Length: 304
Picture (cartoon, one colour):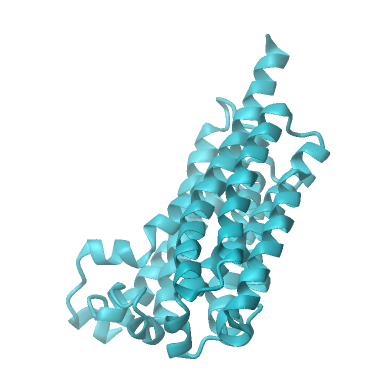
């Protein structure tokens, strides 16, 4: 604590970057979709706003904790060497204080203004990502993304629980879509960043099983993702608008995944993997937006 008092505080922009704001934006977007699909009206708008802020703060706290635990690795990797802790613009003490403060304030918002279920689930997600995945799974197994993907798939469930006080089959579908999306998304990143992961000794799939196996895994898991995206239609809580949008988006995603799979030359495969990584982020956002559009179209049809 004495070090915290004597050391000068970092610039607020460095602390902000420590919380991985772009990643948190996608997390909050998925949680917000879960909230809207669960049902929002004039009476529970304040609850939704408190839930959005609480989830965002805890997600930022988890991201800061992740950076704290991985500072040594981040400093050695080209992709992450400019992160605040890796280049020394934020000290570990300030990073720990920042992560704890965000998490505690977010937890307080959820406890006071939302409900205990959303609080417990969000804190469990924090532990699963920042501790279980970052500290144990990531350095231990090439299946780290498959197993640890459960933490990354939680945002829509958190949003649903915040507004409804429970978790339904619809929320489980949203979870499964992100869970199936996670492996091809992160394996694409690992494919073109293989030298980074090899340098720091992380057992990512391309490092342990090679590029060819990873490209095949991406292609096969992409088909699992496609099948999962039709669960909302099969369970009849989405309709034609979502089905058409999902089909178009799935063609887009599969075409990008196919380019990764068919290129045996490393440089061409890496270019295709970069494109798939970018496509996958937009794909998930558009898919969830289509779910929301379909939902409100159905609401308008019932009330007209």
